[in-house]
Structures are given as C-alpha cells and as structure tokens.
Length: 188
Length: 188
Figure 1 (cartoon, each protein chain N blue to C red):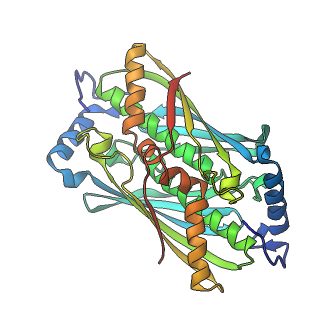
Figure 2 (figure 1 turned 90 degrees about the horizontal axis):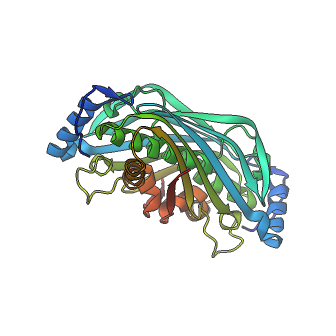
C-alpha cells in the first residue's frame, strides 16, 4: 500500500499518518506484523452457542479490548433453532462484508480518495445436503459468495474498480475464504 | 447423517424427530435443500461498519427472521479503529466456532449421544504484510485456524473424535474456509 499525496490527517475517518507509520514499521519489522487472533466459544443448547472475543496479540504482545464482545448464534426454527441470533453462515457473511469494506476504505484513504458512502449486499448459496451428508459429493459450505458494492465517491469508476479488486485480494477474511485455509481440530 | 436409536424427542436441545424429517424431506426433494443466505452492510466511518441480517431463502421460499440481527465491526486502536466492535477476522472465528459446535451437537443428537458441555477455543495467525501489500508473497488471510474442543459427555473418546471429524468435514463455515470458495465482487 502506498500512501500518496496525503493532504489531511483524517480521511474517511482513517488516520492516514498513523497508517503510513504502521506500514513503515511493519516493513522494517516483519515480526511486528504477526497478529494472533482468538475466540472462546460455549455451547448453550441445541443450535445456540456464544462466542466471546476479548484479546489478541501483535508482535507477541497481548492487547486486551476495551470490553468483551459477546455473540449469540442460533438457527431459525426451520433449521431446528429458536431464532435467538444470526446463524454461523450469516456470521461468515458479516465477517466478509466488514473486511472487504474496511480494506477498501483504508486503501482509499491511503490513495487520497474521499469516500462518502459504501453499501454492500452479500449473497451465497448452500446445499444443505452437504451438512447433512445426504450426498457426499455436495460441498457443505458456500458454493460461492457474491458481493455487490454501491460506492458514493468523487473517484472515477476505474479507481473504484481498482479499490474493489484490492479489497478482494487483500482483505484477510476474503483471502481466508477464497484460498483453502487449513483448519485443525483437536480435543484440548 | 443417520438418526439411529431415537429414544427422546429432544436430545441436547435438538428435536431429533424434526431433524429426521428434514433429512428425509431433503433426501427426497433436493430442491428444498437449496438455501440462500444474505447480508446487507453499511460503512459507518474509518474501520467501523454495520451488517444487518434479517432474511434467508430455502427452496426458493423467503423466510423473515423474528427480528433483525445487527452487527457492528470495528478495529482496535492499534489497527486504526475505536474498538466499537470485534473486527472482521474475529467475526470469522465467531462464525467458525458456532458452525463446528452446532454441527457437532446436531450429529451427536442424531447418533443418540448426550452432550453436557462443549467449549472451544479458536486461534489463528495473520501476517499483516498481506493486507497492507508490503510483501506480495504473504497471504492476507489466516495461515491456518486451530480449534481446541473440551467436550463433557458420557460418550467414548472414539465417538467424540468421530464427532469432531464430522464437524470439521460437514460444518458449512469450516467447508467454506477449508476449501477455496470463489468470491465475486462487482459494482451494483
């Protein structure tokens, strides 16, 4: 990411000098770029469970969040739940939506592009026969995910197109999903 | 998924006869197994944005949730945010935690295995040089994700091991992440 023509400290709510400083720091100190994220989950009942997020590590240093973030997941009745929360595949869309948006806005700020509004819709199809092992040839997860952006900005369509490509290629959640990411499960 | 030896209507909070009925229905009517999930996202400012979940489709039929689920994402100060929410890569862990847990509990119920407690921790490393394009050879997303389960159940370690493998292979979010899932981005 190159931060060119910085005219304002805060562009799109992003502190561009701080962003430049982070890029310089991580370029010179790759160890500082190593982030470790974590989550704790507790099953509640049936399709309901709760995840708590309250800390992460960067460069080996622990960061405690200002407060814990607690998320309830549940299924709708048609999937045997009580609708007490969005379900996990909806949380996955939520994660992806946030990540491509933040990536787009951070890069826009570094490129001195003022953004007024970013809306997006995300959609994806899942064949439940994968989850239920009714047909072993059916993938359990999303077949693909479509993201449609509406961006209000003075930037040209070419710049907006470039920002979307950057968001797709450099968003950590998009990268996690679009590339096969190994998952290791074990009993503690 | 085979639902054997069903002795109780509700096992682990799961309505096993309804689960059996769903499996039978989707086996005979693959069209009914086609689920379509969606999310709407609005950028707020800087690294903050908000996702709303309120409907999904199954077999072409629209289901409106009992209420909208709204999620705020933000970054911690060290990543240029104001800590107003968990960040997108933490939401991704949240989604995965929920999905493997629900998959495990649903299969346990179908296999007549009583579960008393399921806790898990999820951890993953991200090299921020990928997001910031400091090194184009660095993946932007999680290198891998480790899930450690603590399960309290009368079932044997072999059964619990089997349930974990099922959870890994049949959880829709785990499947989305562990296999390369195409993401299509466009301007609406």
